[in-house]
Length: 318
Image (tube, rainbow, N blue to C red):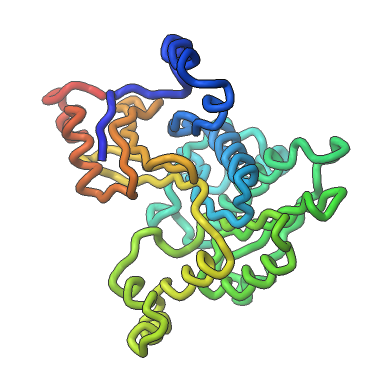
């Protein structure tokens, strides 16, 4: 785990890029992963996600897991109204905020699906913008993977001019979706992209998840039966080749919002939201996903106090 200066880095500083070019070839610079930053707008996030998907495909990663923030109206009293008025013109997300898909959402999993589905459409439009012949593939939604109709699971497909351009994206798949994911992956073959956006299982393992990874034991099978995700992840990762290519998470630490972000070719980076809510400040990085305690240490190392202390003037504003 390392801590970094409390500054936001969108790109290389011109002076550092100039000096770096004297020691690194153009090819070496091109292969370096981009500096990480937290998107502060919906459009910014869409561009970051689609760019990461493109880079991952170039690295022959055709089975991708993606976790994103979701757009939400800042006015909870009118929750949902914003999306109703913008379905016809979905690129006008001017007043949304990006928030974690967690228990703070109103309406449960179907409300989450609605926002995740709109985000998926925009990601696919951006990702397929350079389709052959300049014809953007048509998008099609398939809800048949949600047998109950209320589990918040769906599949979005692109239909391009050639089969190799087609992309399949599962939205909020759960463990019951693994058989369907396997079927679609086999149909797609090795050259077509299949992605999972915001799976309904957590990244962090609990005791049940750890036990369920031991599929050769009776206890492991029982843990899987009780809901442990170990066997499902084993099938996805080891048998189908799925891996995390883009992860953007968030929660509250020291009373303020923090964000964790990672690409398939970078470490984990941790950012803290400033008090104005307009930007994020990089506070550290880690090769492994940092724990809550490690994030708290990063904030302390950067002299970031509890938010209540900053709000009442007992500590400097962020």
